[in-house]
Length: 39
Image (cartoon, rainbow, N blue to C red; front, side, top):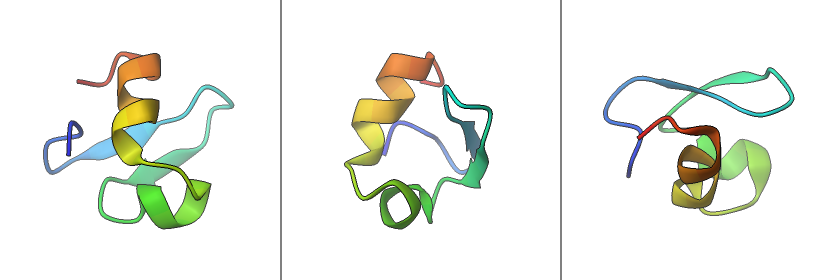
């Protein structure tokens, strides 16, 4: 995962734990971390 052991903030302001990101969004976490600059 691109979000290295931390939290990811989505473009809508939602903060998620990196481990739950894929479940919460239903999309690959890498797609979100790349788009949000959280790499």
